[in-house]
Image (cartoon, rainbow, N blue to C red; front, side, top):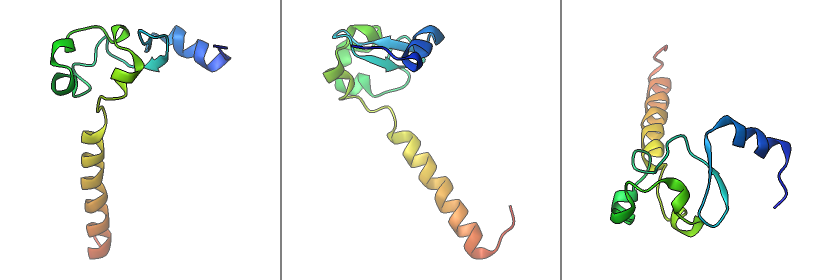
Length: 88
C-alpha cells in the first residue's frame, strides 16, 4: 500500500488504527464498545482493542444509525418550524 501525505497525517494524529489484516481506519476510541453495536454483533469481542478485528468484521458493525435518527428529528423540526413560519 502506498501512503500519501493525508494518511500519514491521520496516523500521526493518533485517531487512526489498522485492522488485523492491515486496513487503515479512523476511530477515536481504542475499542468499538462505546461507538458501535459490537456487543450485539460480536459479544465476545466487546472489550477487544479495535486493531484485533479484521476489516470484514469492522464492516459488519453499525456506528452511525443512531446519528441518522437524531439528524432526522432535527430535519423534521426544521421543516415544521419553517412551514409554520417560526423564526429561529
